[in-house]
Amino acid sequence: MRSTGYRRTVAALSVCSLALVVSACGSGDDTASGKTRITVNCMPPKSAKVDRRFFEQDIASFEKQHPDIDVVAHDAFPCQDPKTFDAKLAGGQMEDVFYTYFTDAKHVVDISQAADLTPYVKELKSYGTLQQQLRDIYTVDGKIYGIPRTGYSMGLIYNKKLFEKAGLDPEQPPATWEELRAAAKKIAALGDGAVGYADYSAQNQGGWHFTAELYSQGGDVVSADGKKATIDTPEGHAVLQNLHDMRWTDASMGSKQLLVINDVQQMMGSGKLGMYLSAPDNIPILVKEKGGNYKDLALAPMPGGKGTLIGGDGYMVNKKASPDQIRAALQWLDHMFLTPGAGFLGDYARAKKADAPVGLPEPRLFTGAADAKDQQVKKANANVPVENYQAFLDGNQSLRMKIEPPNAQQIYSVLDSAVSAVLTKKDADIDQLLKDASTKIDGILARS
Image (cartoon, rainbow, N blue to C red; front, side):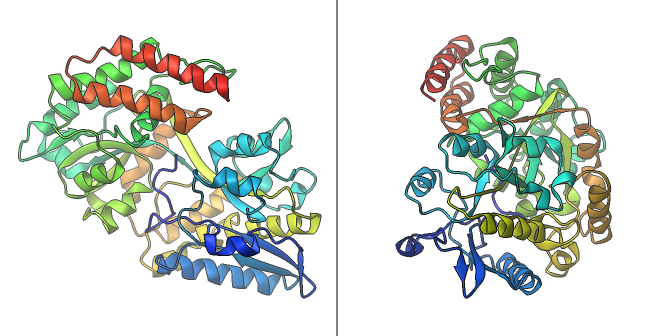
């Protein structure tokens, strides 16, 4: 799952709108007035005025530098709608260059809808600077089918002000689930509606967080060969038992359950919540939309110390694209997203002028000198308290980074039921919940 959606100030993503289906999203003929023409998606909608302006500026500057390429951008909401994604691919309505979640990569290749970029990737100047683990996501059977654009990893957002009120050291966030439970109990004891820890448990988001919590304890959702569920384990039991005990024994999670991301963000933004799991991109939403304050919001690595869930997105190229379109697509990606300190995601000076947050610890896309340059420009333009995120950066160095499981949304729907049960039923049978969920997940994997 995507942590929040778009990159800075809005939760806005885009795909080819239905109005464009008549003329098809893909370009068909790859030339327009003697130029190579590519259609691309994920342009911010008009409602996201700042990001829309930046995107249009960057396309204009790209076309000026590459007068032989014509870029036609499509916008709608969201970038990728799971309900129509496969139908658009199968129906030939997908853009030439299209947005995907990390978890889509293998599926798109399996249904033969992606162009093989391997012969062309040497023309992508930035490719060798990208993190290997992110490149690997779009590499299937030794061939390259996509280019990562952003990545995120889960951590623990916490309220420094509530920590201080509860007698906790805000510079020493919980490093284990035992420490988190103890901290949550102290925060809840403040009264006046304070909740120590909140978690999602509906709309597949509970299953998403169960997965992150399982990774943090060293467990896995699915076996290495992708054929069997691996949640009915001591690690899986520990995840549900911890949630149950915080909810019913400690009363540190509040009485309202079946929460989703917006509910939890509202709680944190109002100053009534101590902690919840999320990625760094939640922080500007908490401030811009939910009433929070940057100085009060800090980020720590996942408790448990063994792993964290990573996700993100990238672009793939339509299998119908011509060689010239593939080359144009890679040049466009380099310009828009993959040049350190520049482009739609990296022009930190421009973002700062627009009062967009600069200095959040992710996405961290590059390595080596490219990463050093990107971080240098980001630091020079930072307008948020970067010291609040240092624990997250330091702690992530020792964590195992794990992508979401295959068939993630179907599996998350199953796991939602287990998470919601322990948070709404004091007598929930954890062993049986895990057995039932395992059986259902095995069935999903057998059908995939």
